[in-house]
Amino acid sequence: MSEGSGATTRYSKDYWDLVSGQIRRRWSVRLSAALLALLYAVAIYAPFLANDKPLVFTGTFYGEYRASHRLVALAAAELLAKAQQGRDGFLAWQAAEQARGETLEGSAKQDWLDGQGQAPADFAAWMELDRGGLDGRLLTLRRQLAPEHHAALDAVSDAAAGLVRLAQASPSPSPEALAAAGERLTAAAGVVRDSLKAAKSGEAPEPGRTVALQAFTSYPVLEALGWNDVYFMLLWALVLLWPLINRLVDRLLLHGDLEAMRRARRGKLLLLVLLPAAGTLLWLSVHGAAPPPLEQSSLKQALAAGQAEAVSAVYPPIPFGMSEQNQTETFRPPTWWPAAAIDDEGFYLTGARSLRTDAATGMPIRATPVEVRPGEPPRNAPARRLLGTDSLGRDLLARIVWGARISLAVGIISTVLLVFIGTLFGALSGYFGGWVDVLISRIVEVFQCFPVFFLILIVVSFMGPSILNIMLALGIFRWTGVSRLVRGEFIRLRGLDFVVASQALGVRSLRIIFKHVLPNALGPVLVAATFAVANGILTESALSYLGFGVKLPVPSWGSLLVETRSIEYWWIQIFPGLLIFATVVLYNLVGEGVRDALDPRLKEE
Image (cartoon, rainbow, N blue to C red):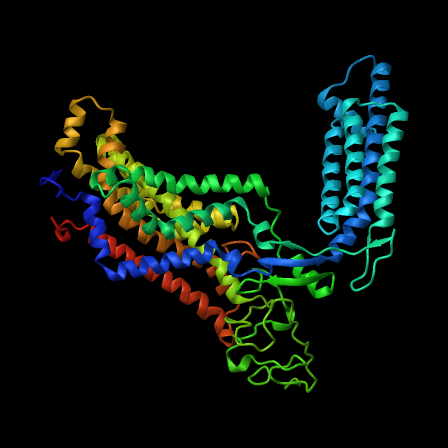
């Protein structure tokens, strides 16, 4: 509704306008929401914050080049052997058919070929796969060679493609054609093998034998991102920028019209979900799928071993991987702590671990100098190990950053699941009443008869420790509270005039439930959801602490606590515990603020 005349228009506030206004007036809710948004940003953008892969790397990969160079001729020979094996297998299969007087097809043909030790029936597809592996090795060489050497690589690729086409055109090519294609491939691979060896670093290349490698720029962190990483990074960037984007859209496109802004809410929400999806599809079309994640960066290992040389490299703020181990720094305290100082020999300078001889036996204690790898701060720099290390020398701060992904994701995803189940059952129970209400209420009571944590513990122990099992167990066993809340709201709302009028007009029950009643019953559900996220984080932490959480080496805040129970290594318990405590408190503050904002007695007219 609007009132007024001329250029002055006054709009009445709807339900969600009043709620958002109450939330904006509470600084504790706004501060808690901002800190939670920051925590989720740290978790989502973890690859850019804590990683042993450089963000940007310019240099040469001698080890990678030499390995691919050695395998080019071998891969070409294997491709030729597979073509010959496929031809022999096809001819043997034909001869067997003539001798048996019957035709073998499908699995029978495959079984016969396997029994004879011949190539599989789909050997042409296998050849295509092998050719792809050869082209991958050629690509590794190409990006480090000057353009004048690319013709030799193209010759190998063209010869391999011709051999594959020959095999796919006829399962039994003529011996002459197969020999000619094989000779072309072997000769081209021989040229690469004999004339494109990598010259040693700092040495002049020998014409016709060795070549100087060209430095190139790569983005290792970006290349390792999966589609889910890209989607949530784009989504969260939009979420963080949403207040600004929303304001610009309201002013420039909707011209401040409050009614138009209300109608555009669903469209904005849909765009918030679809735009990152479109960006992810574009990313996959350009970069393709990411390779399987590695526990430790091969690039960092190559730089440390002298198998790669860096012209320039930009590392993340925490230059350690999620599971990167350094056995010379096991259980090292935070490096800003005085007792963390280590000398050149690898001995601690102060504290209980500074002894050089065993107090009980008098035998000398062996120490190993700290290994400072490329991109890492110096041995005793305060910022080297800000939160210390664990029993395997893994950086605790890096594992906390990556562990936030698991802990926060469990809270959100399990809450979405339990809210969906609880809302569905509560809506059906409260709207229809009668035997439906009795049946669902008895199911709720059965679930509430058992301690939820022990039910989840039993299920996870039988199904195996995994993050998916934890989320499913949380959603399946914690929905009863939401169901009771929604049931009560539906019982209150189903007798109101707008519901009775819809029923009198013949509107279908499902439309009334989800279109008319449910939007007016979401207030208590939102409050319950915020507290459910906090409970989910606590439950996951407890399960991980008991050994039923995520599988190593993937960390979560709860699993970090179980690294040791010794008070000597106090940093292992303190820092993950503080983060769990702070996150739960923030969610509780947000939940209390939303609950107060939804209180009708506090709303302005």
